[in-house]
Length: 172
Image (cartoon, rainbow, N blue to C red; front, side, top):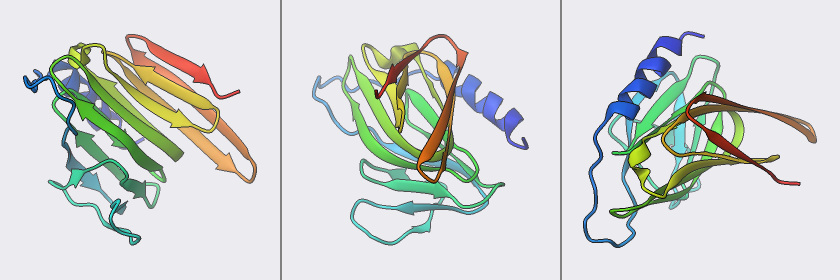
């Protein structure tokens, strides 16, 4: 895969980043910023029913849908404590982005394709979770790749833990 070196560097970068903490103690949406876009990647914001090109520097919010349109497209999206990369021919819905001084929680719904996520141990008691048709997987201070393929009424999902530990919960 063409992005494997970029993916590895991105994983290392996010695991080495220092965290910025919200000292107010209140939960707030954490900004997730688009840091790279390769090929055709689109976003449908929670306020729109139209997909538009995703741009570097754009902020992703809860309710946004992201999709890469072909086999050479991908995007990288970061906040101060975690990272995710949407692989080729993939689609996700951003379900939760919240943070306070002790807890950061991010949740994505993987509709199809591949998503790679990494999160620092500095999430406090938080986690980065990805849901998919068969269940969910989450990490805390580690990295994982999830690939789901949906064909007709059948779906197949592979969860690979790249570093640390990942938790898998079955939907059934």
